[in-house]
Image 1 (tube, rainbow, N blue to C red):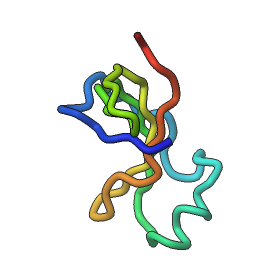
Image 2: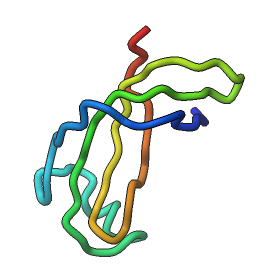
Image 3: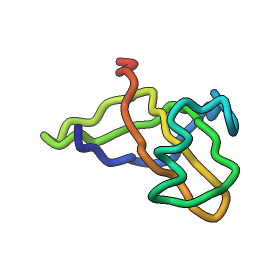
Length: 77
């Protein structure tokens, strides 16, 4: 699903850090080593068809690498 974040991400929480991330080898291979964290938050997103909705988004992040593999987990409206 293609989408774009509109505005800021709120209510950011850490779900997993380091070796507790199940797909850690899949993150390290293309992006490199780092202190990987799986995070979640609430954001307003614009979908590919142009509709704007609030959604819970999940992503992986490491210092110096940035946000990777962002996805919509569920819609909140």
